[in-house]
Amino acid sequence: MDNQGDQQHLVHVFIHIADVDSSVRSSGVIDQLAFSRGESVYLPSRPLHMLPPSLMDSVSFNDQMCGEAVTVEVVFDVQAGAVRETHVCASVVSPAAKMDFTWLNIQLAEGGSERWQLFLRCAQIGSEHLESVVGKRPRRSPGEIAHVKTKGGNVRVLPFTETEGHQLMDTFLRLASHAFRQFAAHHGVALPERKGAQSFALRCGTAPLRRYTDLLVQRQLKRIISGGQPISNSKVWKLGLELEKKHHTARSEIANQRKNLLFDQLSGQLRRRSEVLGRILERVEGESREWGHLNSYIQYPTIQAEVKWIGRKKIGIIVEGLGLEMSVPKPTEFYSPVGAKLELHVTSVDLNRQTIAGEILNPPYITASTTSATSTVEDNHHDNPMGTSWTPSPSFPIREGKEAPSAP
Image 1 (tube, one colour):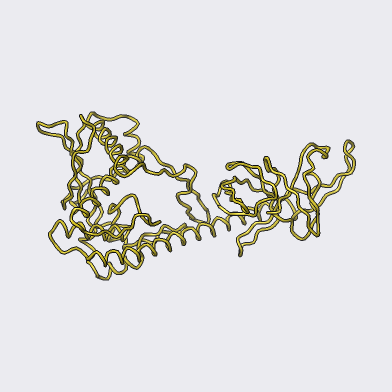
Image 2 (cartoon, rainbow, N blue to C red):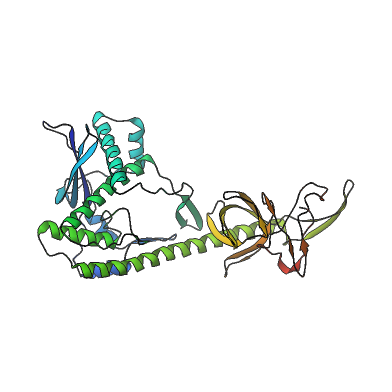
């Protein structure tokens, strides 16, 4: 950041993106490998990097040596609260120490120096500028899963958290992305992205180490800067479509591996708990001095879930603690809102089909009535002397035709 000279109300912020293209020769062996992978894929067990880790380390910025970069210069007018202009160029960056979001958030909390406050003012101006030219950025929900990792037999589910530091970095990287798009459009050069596609990213050209699309963007920008011949528009669009397919494949593989891992973890938890609690739905009959003869069942493992969405024929639930999503048939009558908590009495787990059979124990605002060859279940809230209702849902059939208990 620079605001020296007579016009101190103008602040120049430089955003440097490591020059990966200089180390990955076009059509070379590493380039072909990177294209075949499309992007780095962060699986629960381990990451599959687009580029060899040693090459990633060599081109990344560090505190030992200078590094080549593609740089965006953004000129802020802090008095007028506006972005005046942007420039894209090639540069060499001095050795720089790495920082993490923990350090960054501490600086934000402490307030920092006058120069630091000026930097934050530029971020505010940049955010307002982006909202006016490209629209408001959609935010991920706080409970959304960011990573599922496994290490030493343990599974860790890490929820998504967006701190003030994340928002700050995102603002400047989006400013760089917008400048890259404008720069390419001004010179009539195509970029490998298609607005409206599922793989379209809000940030463009800012992650060439892990996304081949961004490496290709960087390659096009550098050829404009150096006066070289950019890749033809038709070829770039064709490459972009292929990269879209690779992106969808990668997202699908991550989702499948996450689900497999989480379901296996859930099954293991239920199996261990059932070994302590007894056989599935073992019926126990007893006498009560107050209520007379009662039927009951020993408690088999239950799982807590939350209603995620409600469709015409199915409802989506999320298993609490694991974030495992699944859809189940909708009960006959369903009055529970999205976000309601459910308790599921599990009777079986099918690892191959990844399905859970069981009963809804305490569905808020839910009643269900179903008749089958083995049982008839109705809402008996008013007739139950215990004042409670246990209404099994058709979504979770009782296994082996066992009779449902009249009360929990």
